[in-house]
Image (cartoon, rainbow, N blue to C red; front, side, top):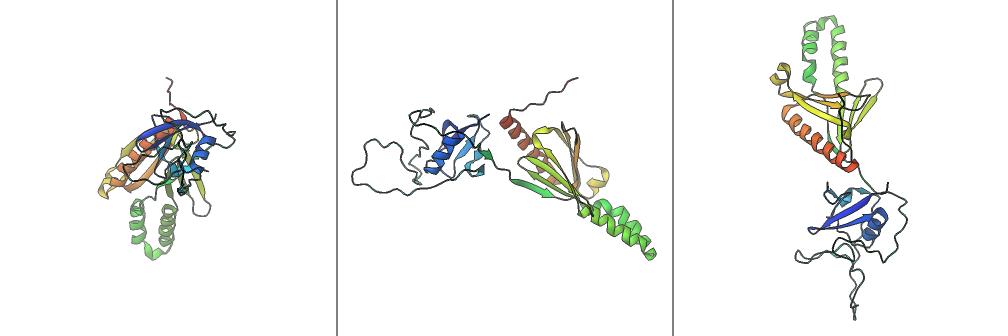
Length: 250
């Protein structure tokens, strides 16, 4: 289904526009690089720079000896703070129907951007390291300790504006992905061991059949609290954008 776009610029909201019309306004320099866009007049709002496939231009104003009394569309030029910018040749939140619109053959989408990345702490291996240190004269425990270090070192977490990814594997690599709009609930926990070293874990309950439960374990406690809030915010934004709601059946 073609998307409609709203523009928030200079504290005013304009639209809705189809994707093709949004491209025309951007190419004509009618949209400020600081403008915000959304698929609904109520948001959520995102920077215009995150729209994939949109080319913003800033044409320079050319002085004219006899300016037109009723210009159809004033070119965009960065004004002083007192001068408002109008992204389209109209006000009152209505679309200009006097110009034919191009076919909406290519949909504009909000680009995916990285938000956070990290790894579990090597503190999770402390018991193995201590035991291997006690029996290091047998040589074999040294290889065991090295292998355990590699296992944790090769686990990586990545959070983007749309997905959560977990990569793991020493000799072979595997990456599991979770669409954030499928996250149903999150929880923050600290075991006694984790509290002793200032670590924490985040558990995500999801509607993804292949990954019904996802855990981000052994990361900094303060970092885990902030990360949980980021996941919650991104999940709500994606659900609003996709018009998705979770319904549990007893």
